[in-house]
Amino acid sequence: MTAEEMASLLKERGLRLTAPRWAILRYLEGNDRHPSAQDIYEDLKKDYPGLSPATVYSTLGILEELGCIVALGPGPKGIRYDADPKPHVNLVCRQCGQVMDMEEDHLARLVEEAAMKAGFSISQVTIQAQGLCRSCAALLEREVQEV
Image 1 (cartoon, rainbow, N blue to C red):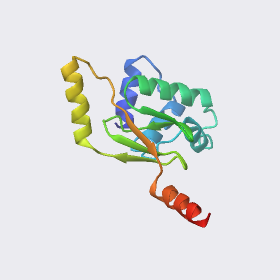
Image 2 (image 1 turned 90 degrees about the horizontal axis):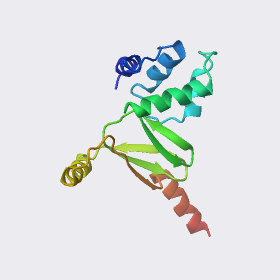
Image 3 (image 1 turned 180 degrees about the vertical axis):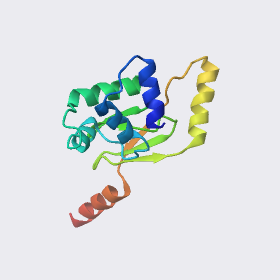
Image 4 (image 1 turned 45 degrees about the horizontal axis):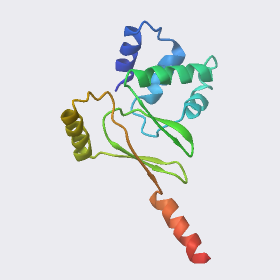
């Protein structure tokens, strides 16, 4: 979702589009790093001295309610935010906290079919798997071999 689309949704809710809010929207647009609220605050505070952690948290909460972003977690690095609200799989490394997106259309279809059979109206699909990324698994394997 573009920053402009998110801004439009905020305006429809009667919220002002302040400079800090606009900065948060631009930061999230196309961001695939899955930042935490603290990451966003730290990355933006230099350029937006009026930005407060409360503004970041409240803006993220509103964007999540609107379906613009998805909260992931908690994980090793706390709650992270996914700027891609479309159904996909998030692979979360429980060691380093890395989050990887995997586009798996067949899983999304499976969830939609199950919901349809149950007469369930889906507002959001979040599929999250926790484990070890390739790097952390290899490091663990080396540590085990050394013992």
